[in-house]
Every structure is written in C-alpha cells, then in structure tokens.
Length: 75
Image (cartoon, rainbow, N blue to C red):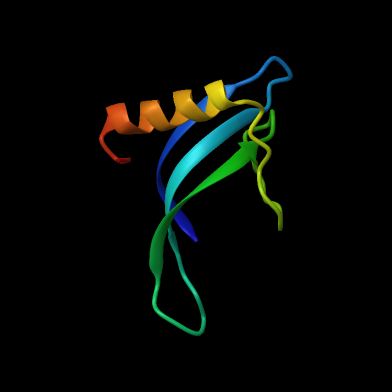
C-alpha cells in the first residue's frame, strides 16, 4: 500500500487522524485505488490496525473529507 495524498486533524493528545488516498497492492491481483482513515502517533509514525480507525465524531469526518475535496483529490 502506498498513499498519495492525505488530510489530517491533530487532537489534544498529539495523535493525528489522517484521511488518505491510496493504492493497495495485492500479491494475487492487480493494484486498486482507494481511501482509508489511519491514526498517526505523536512521533509521526502510522498506527496500522487490522480493524478500522476510530473516527471520533461526524464533524471530524466531514472536516477531513471537505479538506480533501478542497485539495482536489476527493470527490
């Protein structure tokens, strides 16, 4: 997986939620484009998880997707 663009929002605890435009690379088939939400730790490294990234509230979701739209890579 590689990400091409991201919109982020930092929280009081210094963790950052990122919305990313990605390309997913699979061993058994062609690559596919997509999007994901992922947390960035206070040290800047990504917090990968097998499950989903928790989005704190609808306002955060809307701000991140609107920022991506404003940057021209979503929607």
